[in-house]
Length: 353
Image (cartoon, rainbow, N blue to C red):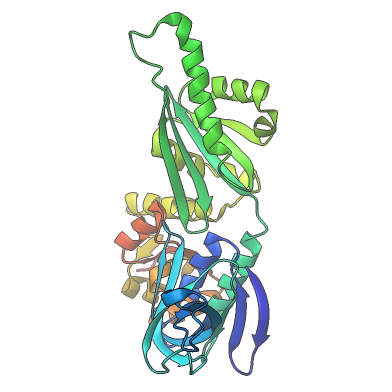
């Protein structure tokens, strides 16, 4: 994410999204009531009599601004769509006052105008900018003849696989076994090579498969081996990927640690709840009471509640009284667990009566 332009008097910031994570951040920055403008393309019928593009018309690109009613981010398609009423644009090309869906795309600047930019809005922009400087990391978990992969995004983990090797069949001829294993490893490498910008990789799993694969890439693909490290896990598949995240291994590699840190904080909350401890509380009413008492040391808030005015007041109060605030993505397991607790939880400095 890059800031292209700011106009404090008008409450306008122009941003340039460069990654899928940036679009996710924008989906939380843009709120109903905001004026959002971006380039859009429409096919206009040629009325000059010179049918340059037959009956399909002519494509024209221009800036259009809509007053937002709703915003939706589709992580699997990588699309961010804002719906609302058109407020500005070329009057010969758009119908002012009509409803429209504006597609906000990568590498296409977006102007956002708000009545008020809160500290949380600006903090999220800073997080997006800082995250763009962090190298991407991949987790590969191998168990027997199954390989699962996860790439860490700002909003959660994207899973790939499983890749099935077909190594464990009882009828496999021993002389063909090594070739089948090599084919399995080659398929894993081919999948790894499809990811762009990977600068760190954890090869994990419960058995010796990870060691054999690491030896394979060390001999044939030293560039991949150079950015990799081995890690033992108690389980394979997605459970193994979660285990790697919870250990904080990716943070040690100076990669995207946001989700790993969120999951560890949520694990602390659940641990305290499991101990029936008085040092944790959850739910909006209970957390508000703790914040007003100055008892909150760590406040966890699910991102879906950021637009609620009373939640923002709880966040401000917590910080003003020396507490820390962490916003959890609702897209990963830690966020879903927080959502089940009402969307807010707090680790306390001292127990409340």
